Length: 160
Image 1 (cartoon, rainbow, N blue to C red):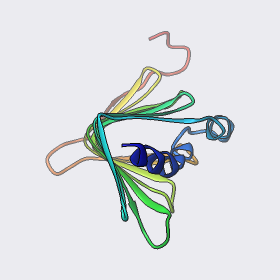
Image 2: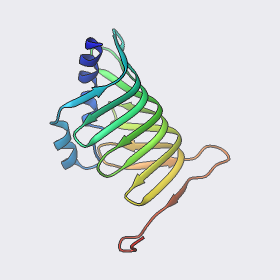
Image 3: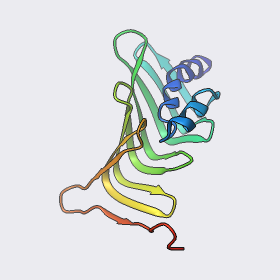
């Protein structure tokens, strides 16, 4: 388990990028330690795998899931981090829930699929696929065949 935590901590420094929608909060988060917790884990030549009540925190940001895996490309760099089973990602500004999430390092994008819920303050948007750019905070929600995107938005100053 010790090797998996070391490998996961190195790979999960990527989550500093996944941290927040604004450059200021992200810069603050990226300087903070990464904490990893899981019931089981392993390190392999192709990446790492953490299972059973996995939680990763860095500063105010948290990623929880039943399982989180990191995959290496060429070299020692982690290319993707995949979370599955009860995915819950929260920053100071957003909360994203879904069944599965794949974070791609090269384009700083996380794609959450399944029953997706994006919450920003009181505003809520639901769909089946959310693409979220962690550098800009831009989000794009899509629906699957036969379903629709749904949302509730509160104008500023509405008190609701």
